[in-house]
Length: 398
Image (cartoon, rainbow, N blue to C red):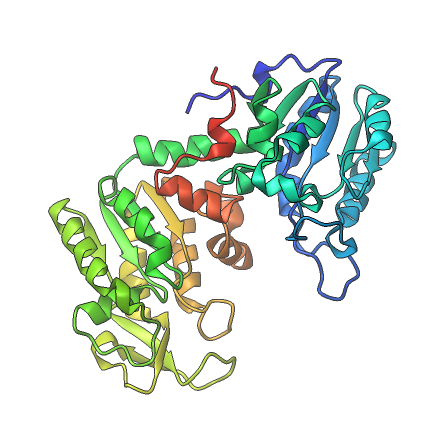
């Protein structure tokens, strides 16, 4: 993917509209406290580069799902407060329930070189998620150039990415450039052995990824709830574990496809079982052949963790998407933590898809030891599936 980056644009004295992903988690007490600011921090190198090169920067983002109307609890005010602390008098917040209005246009017009402003939540407008042409024009009218720095929404065609890029000269920011280069290289020209670790609840969420990776990787390790559909299809008793009955046949086909491509596909050999998902509940480690009919497998067992870790440590390229168990509940997080630890010890390139896997690495305190932690769960998944990401393909080629 040979897209123009922010360094290919002549930004001095220009107004630059930057689509960022400031969809940050907020404290549930309604205080507006940001509980994890990593998405804001991830965009700072691009923002700072533009400011240092005398651009006037206009930031746009969504937050949550306000459903096309202005709602106070989805306001970007908490983000504005964060940015004000960072940039002090260089920063301005121009809120409007319609995102762009005459007052906003006038304020942006008066924005000086080296200053940055934030507009209100783009999803206050119904047309945003439908790539509405009028809303795209309103946004584009504010600027001379457009930069997409929101990898997390690049798998969607919205007004604030695809719409605006069809009107203004465009480029990607440093963050998207990094996402493209890491994931793109792994898929096109990986150093081998190449190992993919897939987890999470559903086979149906990962079918596209497995099908795309079968022709590219040397080993696939399957854990999480999705593993039990594969195991049941092979005649194993899985008790009350997660099962997608309508995907059993497909899982057998995927195993056959892996064999045909000389891909080593490994499933759990043991599991941690319990009566229900609850912290402090009694658990038991059993072989995969011995799950009682009234119990549920909620994490991979220690033998599986050891086998998986051994495969991971041999690798030169590793891609991980999806936890090995119900990692957010203590007692069912050992498998996921063991994978995170093994990944941190790899002598090669390690890529963690966004979402739960990224959170697991963060919680384990190992984020700094991973080559690349993706900022977009859904987007990285679709990228791994080999799908076109509209928010990136709309950007001008070099």
